[in-house]
Amino acid sequence: MTRMHVAGSIHADATNPAPQWLVKPTDVNQLDHRLWSDTVERVGSGELRIGGLTASQIVARTGSPVYVIDEVDFRGRALSWRKSFDGWNVYYAAKSFLCATVARWVAEEGLNLDVSSHGELLVALRAGFDPGRIALHGNNKSEDVLRLALTCGVGRIVVDSSDEITRLERLTAELGVRATVLIRVTTGVEAHTHEYIATAHEDQKFGLSITGGQALVGMVRCYHSPAIDLVGIHSHIGSQIFDTNGFEVAARRTLKLMAQFREATGVMLKELDLGGGFGIAYTADDSPSTAADLAQGLKDIVAHECRAFGLTVPILSVEPGRAISGPAGTALYTVGTVKNVEIGGGLTRRYVSVDGGMSDNIRPALYGADYSAVLANRASEARPVLSRVVGLHCEGGDILVRDVFLPGDVRPGDLIAVPASGAYSRSMASNYNHTPRPPVVAVRDGRLSTLVHRETMDDLLALDAGLNSRDDDEVYG
Ligand SMILES: *Cc1c(COP(=O)(O)O)cnc(C)c1O
Image (cartoon, rainbow, N blue to C red; front, side, top):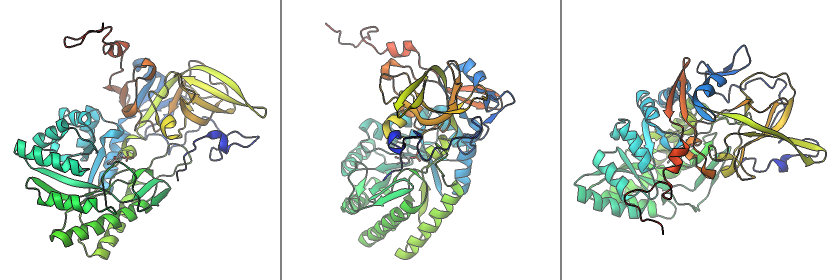
């Protein structure tokens, strides 16, 4: 299964509570550049600098906590995906992080956009993103979002169920438009990090099953629908994947399906979208492939499988989200309290509490995801101490970084930086404990600009009908 480090204690031995993969640094100020966005460095004073601004300069302007996007890094990754996958369609997966400015960066770097909700589509359209370059996903798209997609001319609707085909038939007739669709299929491949599982059994909510036969039935149905243009197949096998093994099986099964469709209808579909899920480095234990290596691997796999089935190579697409937005983002927090806690066997663990937590990064609590962190506002001569960075929420599982060596002199008022926080952090943020969500800023060449404002207490209170009634409210009592 996965290599996630769900419970630190199961890795610990009697004398060393650190997980085996975590190496005690010889210099606790040292940055592992594989984890950090391109422009991150320590300056003379020892402070962390991103995009030409030090951590304390950023926090002085934005408050804490804050998500900081390194614009040069984000754009550079987007461009490197587009160039590495030359001739393919590269869709940036909006769910990893989207706001209007990011949608514009994505357009400027020549990528397409994949959205999976009404809100994401709306942000993209309001930002002026070309609808023809948007793909709309979702296992339960509302009628509202389908109407919007059909009327604005979204490039691809990724059909996820036979109910959706029925809905599209009705809406295209009603609106007098056509729908260009890919059909989302489940290949039975489930990939996580270095491992993947290929089974015949597909117990999940997305797509139409190949092995169960629903995929081919749905495709033939789309083919015969007067207002639906079926152009291809879509498969997405998982997340935080480091190699191409899982894609090999997915490509084989989807291309075989194309061959079967050709047999059934005489038509060769033009497009194959292999989805996203390409992994990044959250800790020193992660070793992601480059976009160039993945591109070469996927090209070879598809070419090989096409030969085997006697198919011409379709137009190919990928949908990286995390691989572009993740490493570009750093979260900055302020330390509030530091505690040494006895954990048995004469060992202590240092708990460093910061002014954020599971409301701004749910991934450690949700998936047992590991992160890393450094002291950001200064260098330190103190020895490395095994620490756990935790949040301010009323949950024991409110952990941001389960295991990391921080300098022994970390104290209240210090800034902590968590790399690889650009994806699925702000986009999954919640208001748990009535906590306002942090802002997102972009930094570049010493300049800072706001991408998403800080949520205020007033923003939160505005929704409480007992404090702020609205005209259409049913009044309580
Ligand atoms: C989540 C998702 C992606 C992006 O996944 P990453 O892990 O961010 O690359 C791409 N395509 C689909 C259909 C997804 O659901």
